[in-house]
Image (cartoon, each protein chain N blue to C red):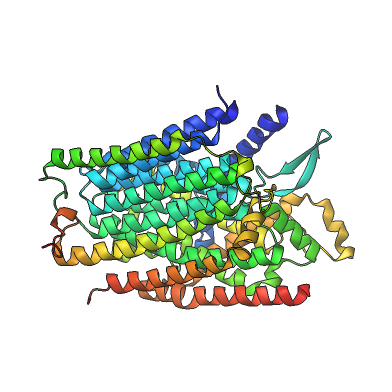
Length: 169
Length: 102
Length: 341
């Protein structure tokens, strides 16, 4: 019961702030709604027993990535809003049509009954109370090579971002 | 009230994903488009964590960490490109980014 | 019911009151210490030796006119100080103030929550506070606040990396992310982590100075260049919230330093047996005393060191502290592996 209330509240907030992100006129307001949205997603992770991910979500997404967006919005000091002189309706119709196609696809997938747990893969490591140790163990054993690759990806992205943002490109 | 099943999480995830898609398709401000992509990535993450919880297997959470890594890389490079573009063209409207179009 | 609701609520009320009173008196202490260093007397008029000065300050801030600039984004302008203050206060939720005590025969742990990701929780909460500063600077719609806000957030993000990396070496040494476990690990080791991780302590402290915008890293509010930085346009109660947040943040970083490096609630030399008589002092008093000593260090440094230049600040963060912190992690991990064999 308590879990249901928590789920519906958080889900409503996630969707509500998600809609606000894409409808807000002011980009800075958009970013603020995005942060709130991410915080509620972190709440959802706590509900699902993934405390470590919840904290990572707040540190990396809300505290890192979105701050970057905020910086860029402040650096690109816009004199006129980019969507002022557009044919809004044409874009809107096209966008909604494409989105409806994706939605139909998702509904088709969801129409199949989801596979029961028995048919799926057996748990590699039974999830205990210590979520952090669990994730860490998997990350440094089974997924060590993807983990190292991810670090390389981040390094490349960092160097790329610095090169791109230099003035004398 | 019915108990919360993974289907609930999947519906939530699908809805959030659709919001992201609508954002990408309808907005012209490239910064908002990148933010909509972040929303879509988050929708995927919700799905992964929900299934990790269903199968009691922490591997799903490991994948979320990788997704977050990719999102960070994407944001850094994407915003770098936006800055470089803005310096040359003074705009962030993707309809005016037609340099490569013929 | 009592365990679930009443006791945590009482604890929250006590901690909140304690923090607010500490903030009020930190302001007085800061003025007094500055004055003593500069061979002045400091506030002397309100009450004996000025001890009632904080009350006068609060009254003044309450009755001052609260101005909102005409061109400001009103909602964001009001929200920004709140976004700064709330993370500073909710960080206290995971800080263990003392060992378990028994009240009316009931064991009560002296912390509000013992999360298994406690240390990361503090990092997460601290990273939200940046928004308040950037948004405060942006929403004022004025050039000095915007520059101050951008400076402040660049500084916070840079130093957050170094500080978080020192946490990693402490986590390696203690083997846990829970704040309570980190303190008990220091008890089991018989030595404070300040002696195990002196480099981490140094980096943490420098990073903490920068993260709380304290001198010598108080560039975001450098008077000579930026008037007052991101809160130039703020006045009255909303300015007071920024002020409150700055001091609350100082208390948080001091309390975290105490917990991670100075043994939290443990008495000095927790493993030396003949100092056993020190155990008559309640554990939370040790915690408070240590936290205040760290806080005093903040004031002392402000009175002693001149301000850095902005490029020097960035160079120190990225080219000195972060590499040092990474090297420290590598050495800690190597030693830990070597000792475990």
